[in-house]
Length: 191
Image (tube, rainbow, N blue to C red; front, side):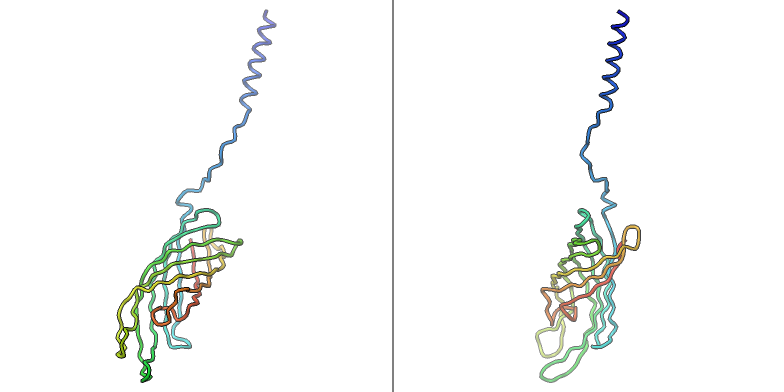
């Protein structure tokens, strides 16, 4: 009887220990926290009157959120100082408009290769524009911009790096836009 009881106890203990070694696969959840997905940075552009007599200074902070490894969305603020020369026709009188421009933007960025990305952005800026008269008067207006393009990102810091992007403004207006061209080149950093 002791022998049967010992065999029964041995089988019971073996069964319990074997069942304890069964592994249950749990769904792997992304352990990246909301805070880890956030990034901050900005752009800085300077053109101090070389070539065409225009001065352009851009300071644009941004905050982004990584939806996944390849896709991010974000918001940004924009401040520009622009000084441009205009010519009134038919008199050919020249005058300069200096202007503080401010506004906001939203963007979407998708990585296509390790260090290259596609970028789209909607921006609206409050700027001085020429009034529709022959006096050279100005008025303030909100001017939209819709940019498409791409760029490159070079990791430098533990979480961020530097980037350069080339964008084309599909809504560029030669008279109203604070940018001198539909093409915009930006350089920036993220942390």
